[in-house]
Image (cartoon, rainbow, N blue to C red):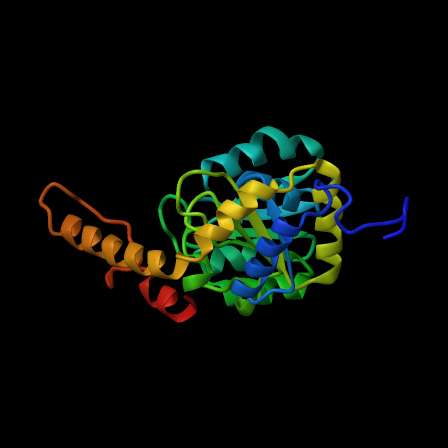
Length: 257
């Protein structure tokens, strides 16, 4: 570029080649067009909540990661945004909750910690009817096992601190979308709030992605072995694991993941 002129990488908070590489990889993995890497999973959720305005209504899973719950109840609820908790694994409750006047629906599937499975395509259809943004937290399954954008979600979000990175040596979050207007807004939010992922941490997550497929398959194999062992133990009353055939979410999980 010319002296004093524009440059794509003039300031790392706005744009960085290593973060770009991670974002391109995550967009490809989630079959999305636009990806944004943040300094943590909660930072990614924070950015998504920043799409909202005072007076907006949000439907959110009643079984929820504690950090997201605190973000809802301790911070964003004081900004004039209404958050309504719903059992998003229950179609009747969903039908009653998601209607005209709802601006966003946020679902974890499986939920953290009870591992409830939500009908993502059904929720997507309800959101489309009322014009709500549909957000799916895909942290537990990762794009190896589930692709929410293909099931109708507008945004898929991850805590990359967990499986995506996989080495327990960094914190990161990722949001992916196919919606250009949402992407434009998230780009503005990221550059303005200053919560984008640092170059080195972007490299660490990229390193983790190289083994994601192998790791997730082994995680699943180990988890099923542990669940089978526990359900046959006289010391254990109930096992909450949707990979077990007797679990209420098993058939739905097999269909959409």
